[in-house]
Length: 82
Image (cartoon, rainbow, N blue to C red):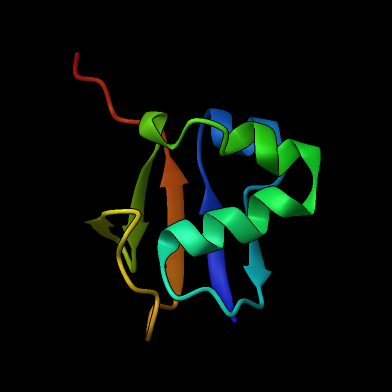
């Protein structure tokens, strides 16, 4: 099981702040594909991954990063300064 956290507009589109996911995904991109196939709201939230950032166990990562040993995946929009 992996804890998946959603922030900002990602959370708004999916309708959940977090959930536990049973997955066979090898990479973040595989996880996104699994989630997107679930329901329209996930597909909408992940339709443009270039507008998203991901953190694995609170460390910024790429969508190609492996999930082996990861306990937490967080999806969020890029942070803006100000």
